[in-house]
Image (cartoon, helix red, strand yellow):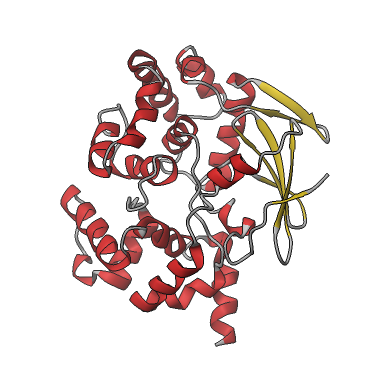
Length: 301
């Protein structure tokens, strides 16, 4: 039985939020329907013209879980209005991406997902995360012929070998995943969750003490799982956006640590407390998967 989440498309659109590179566990299963795993629940979502509907296995009411996951306590429409007034570039692409929210994913899932993101693309990262969950995660349920698994614990990943991950297609990332898992198992998994209670800069710096975690991965984890809405992950797309639309004086320069910080500070000054959410819309507008949306918007003008 479908239940209503009671949220308008202007506040949540699954077709952009679930597939723009924040989480890699959601799959389209029918028109306007997606299925994925949050914690130990297999959840199916349906976007309608007025609402988002959901059902889950187990058949508990997972509305509180979904409201937390989608951070529905944050009103998105007023933020879009604020950002459109503050920035012409944002105003030019925002109509193509209504309801694009920042997810609040589990920190362990988020960290290891973005450890797989180096020199990678969303479809391949999704396949790698699927393989990781099938091999090391607890099986939750079979739905319509597909098995769904919980994301592996730090301790399950720490027991993996580089050779096993290499065989699953992780390439050079196999060593990083195993090394970080073993480091976290020594610190205790709760160490990562406690970062939610630290100020942004401190949480960011703590994450970079993990092997293989640079500024970009640290900011992804801060933004998508640690309640730091001002974090600005600067990847190739955001580096190009910054040079083209905001800081042309950076053209021809290298993305040094100082320049990385300069870009983040510029976005934070322009977009405010939820700068990372605004950045996420600008980032989505650069993705090949959404190019048709942007082109259609430009044709209509």
